[in-house]
Length: 103
Image 1 (tube, rainbow, N blue to C red):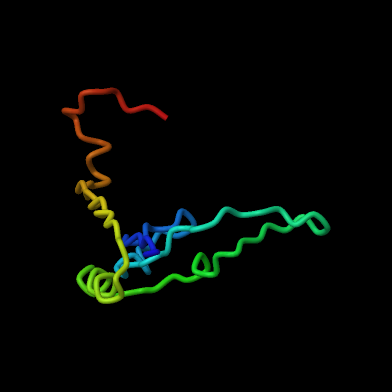
Image 2 (image 1 turned 120 degrees about the vertical axis):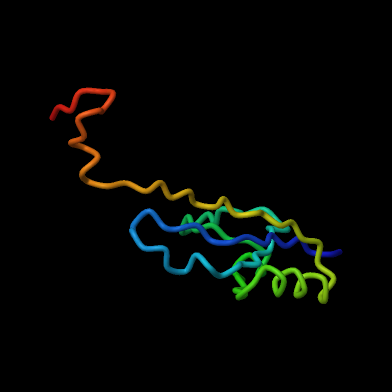
């Protein structure tokens, strides 16, 4: 049975304003078995140990080559590029604004 791998680029975390760790590509194995609830302690467990593995790559091509070399089926998720709109503080006080400026 061949494993399914998901290849994607990590998104920026909501706890940071910077864009650190967003340039690396991640290969993550899809779960092959369901998680079960352990009755005594209430922990969740699974027989699938690949669910704990994340592999990091510097480029998308490296991640795809890894999956092909090892015979894994893979899906690629293309990242959404961030659109930066230039802004200036002085635009808040322009005299030709469409809307009124209020607090």
